[in-house]
Image 1 (tube, helix red, strand yellow):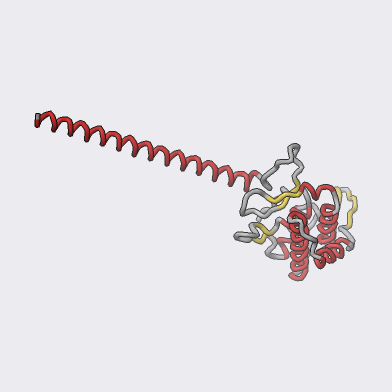
Image 2 (image 1 turned 90 degrees about the vertical axis):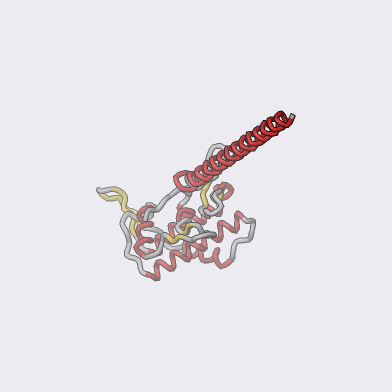
Length: 211
């Protein structure tokens, strides 16, 4: 399983680990090992922690709290009070320990520290200026959220490799289908015209014979 980081924000990338929420949900954090791998891939920790099923459940619960808080903002609804309390509690936990070693920067911690890193990112997003830039992917089936930092402010897709290319392929198929439909229609018109002309010619020939 490959994780993608296209949202421009740690908390939104974490929320995106449940894909296609409205149509065919795809869970990327199916096991504790998946959550541990995500923490390393996201740069939260430098080595995979040992997580339990309980740890996974807590992290998935935090993910859904973040998603509900952000979508409530996009839909101009009040933040769910329970989710806000849970987010603040997670953000108050000590974040991953950071140290400098001869091999580089080391970040260590467990499930609580992973959750704290995500929660702090969510707090800073929800309470900061980037909140106004949060969008949902324009592909109807996609529910991934991202921060639109494009110069024109018109970014539509969470990522071109998946959703953008899907839309382009669908548009191409639609144009091709429309072109083929027009060609078939033109051919039918030409056949009809030819048959009509042939009928006129036969009629004229019969009229000449009778005369």
